[in-house]
Length: 155
Image (cartoon, rainbow, N blue to C red; front, side, top):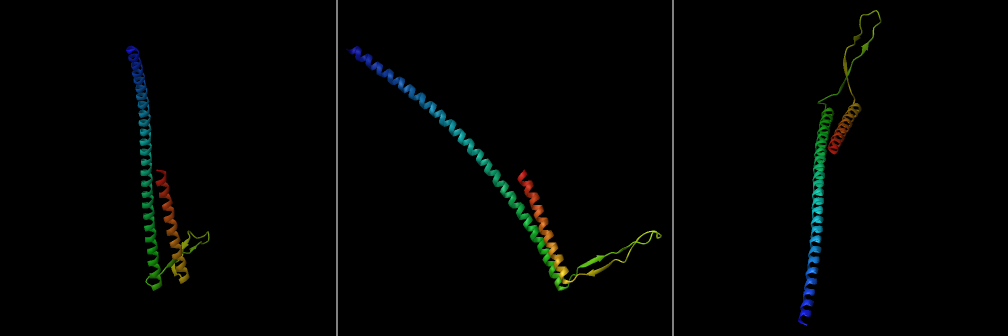
């Protein structure tokens, strides 16, 4: 009877050892799967962090481009406004250089340039000239901004 109990206990111990072994193998595989998942997650987070840093740098570059061209436009507008004040106060005048080219007959040896004279603009002409200068300055800065923006984005 003792041998039967002893065999029964050995059988139970053997079964427990096999179950513990299977459980250890399961834990080992589960641990490997978790480690692999952790490595993949870490790599994904690293890639996302690098992408975020690139986006931040691009945003800073675009902000610098915007600041540069906004400042240049403000300086141009200040210069134009100063010119307007000087024109209004009479410190400066706008003149149009007028050169008339006369064509002489075939008998003469060459054409000649008439007397180059200047004539002044009235107030409306001066305002139109200043408005034209301002539009040119704005368009120039917008074009330069877009060129710099395209270069920054394409890099």
